Amino acid sequence: MPRRAWRRWWRLRWWAGALAGLATLYAIQPLPIGPRLDLDLFPLVDALQAPARWWRATRLWFTNQSRLTEENRRLRAALERQAGARQELNALRAENRQLRALLKLKDIPGFRWRAAKVLGRSPDQMSQRLLLFTQADASAGDVVVSRNGLVGLVSETRGRRAAVRTILDASLSAPVTLPGRRLAALVRGQGERLRVDFVPLADAPPPGSVLVTSGAGGVFPPGIPVARVTRVRPVAGSLFAEVEAEPVATWRRDAWLSIASRKTPAAAAADSDARP
Amino acid sequence: MISPIPVLVLTLAFAGLGLNLAAGGTPQPDWALALLAAALLARRHAWPWALPALLLHDLALYWSPWGAFPVGCLYPWAVSRLDAQAGPGLPQRLALMMALTAPMLWHGWSLASWLLTMACCVPVWHAMVEALEHRHA
Image (cartoon, rainbow over the protein chains, first blue to last red):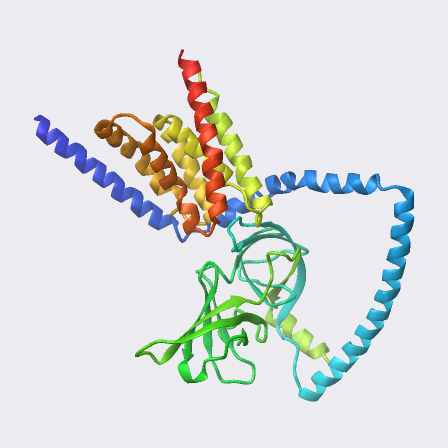
């Protein structure tokens, strides 16, 4: 083969290889390889956290008796305070039940709730992804909630381990509304902040408003706080305002989160029968 | 005799991945990326084992193949072209190291983490070059 033709053939092979590589990357992009890899790394993450646990246990072991006595006294006092707070909490619970009955509000039906321990967080600034260890088997699509609001969705599970995409992940969007208003919008993750789409300029919520899940689509239970509006900007020539928000939930600090799984229709029916 | 360097680097990179996930939320370098970038910088012929590891790193930490891997694929070709045109030298390698680690910023890592990654990469790169020279001597 002449040299020129050989060089052309060689260049063609390079281009074909590069195009095949790009196509492969595009093909594997939607596959859940990342969450599965993270779940495989779970034992390693657990092992790497073990020294911190041992250190804590050893420090506790060597705490001297006087400190323990003092701590015991302090804890007793805290326990007494907590007993008082518990009584107040029970009274508030009873009052809350009465108010709910008065307002004819219902609990979030059709979901089963349980706690999950946060074992790992992705190292990006906002920890867009989490690794959880659940009390019972979770499944993909389960909703993850902190004590402040919506955290995200379970992306992949293996037994009691779950990889979670938070609402800051660009692949998630949650239908939201503003309590007491007819607003129906969509919150989308943008890495470090949230964007609220389809907010008519006339109905735009003021900064500081808290948007809650509307329950539309059936993925997220209704009434869970999702985002606090930070900026509203009219867009020239558009019916919709440009609305930016921040998550209400604080998953970067919380060690425990809740997971809500949708109940089977039979279980939901049994629950509704059992409810007074 | 098979070189122990790839095995050592891959093992440490694997541990680095775990460390990144275990201590997520605290400013830290991307350990695995620093090690794999150092391996590529020290010897561009390391690509047959460094590039698949880079792809696994991207998928595990970024949940996307569009991280350091595509830039890493271009690295062996780019460094040979630049060496042929400008002569072998450090400046092009430093620029390529920055390009190789820059996708971290795109995936939400802080500037401090990026700088720490490069600060971790340079001494490892130096140590690997020393080790390879010692081996070939």
